[in-house]
Amino acid sequence: MLTFDVNWIAIAVLVIANMGLGALWYGPLFGKSWMEAVGINMEKVEGSNMMPPYVVAIINSFFMAFFMANVIAWTGTATVGGGLLLGLFMWLGFTGLSFGVNHAFELRSLHLWFINSGMYLVGLLIMGAVLAIW
Image 1: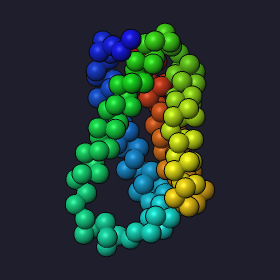
Image 2: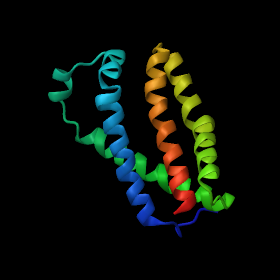
Image 3: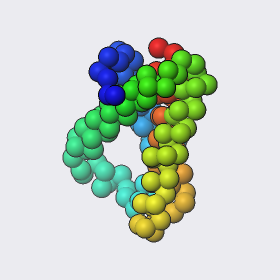
Image 4: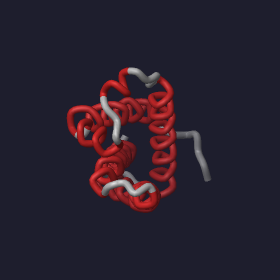
């Protein structure tokens, strides 16, 4: 069953870490490739109100960490390896392949799928590993 008896400090730290990962991922690592793949440029970004996407990203990061904490509790996972495996399974079962379907029907490139789903893979791996041992 769903529990609220989770490590709230770990969840808060993971929200911040996931936002940092997103900034790094969509900034210096893959920012230029991502913008080209989705057809936007810096002028469009700088002229937009970016607060709503950041709020959505923070809420998303919170729920990812909260539900991962519940999965960790349900499975009794207490090792880094077990947490990494759960992160991989969550990505495979719910995120990575779902992104693949969306990208296919939106006629988006495989390259964009690697960028977008890859960030979630790394984020879920980190969340699983951290929550399993913290």
